[in-house]
Length: 213
Image (cartoon, rainbow, N blue to C red):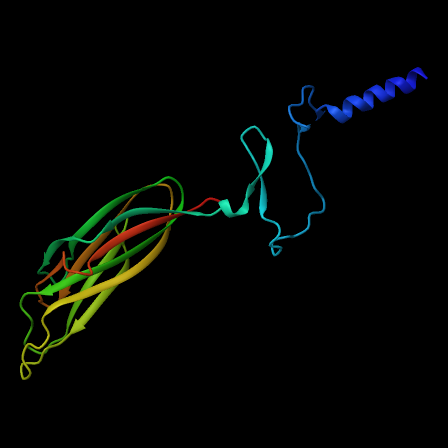
């Protein structure tokens, strides 16, 4: 009879107290001090009724967070609608239009967009083809080029002049740290041009997507 009373008291303590495995002072209803293994887990990735994800804090406490809160963080890095006007009068060397420095807190997908006006102060009249090119550089390396081409024959006159636009977009994964994003302009053959300025439609922007999963 005495053993029965002892067992009943012990069971009562278990049903109302915290239980620890490999720990003398449990702090939660079930406190496991060690590794855990689950041998069979069902795949519920296609089940829309599963909307919560298990997560732990730095102390190993397990709770859930809504699956909807786990997303890619969208961080604007810069957005310009006016650019310096860079004159280029070289067939071999590009002129820097704008350089922006960015700092990433961790690895991110960086998305870059640009639209650069190109102005020809003296349109060609010899009928030879010209190329108006804008370079996008990341950390000093050309990663994308945007170009326009035109030709004016002497018999028809200078029917193409004024502003052209070079535009493009580029995405790149970059590690944490500081990086440079640069626009350069070059026009050839023997075609002085100005790239940049504040014409409508001018833009140079970048955003970072951080994966918070």
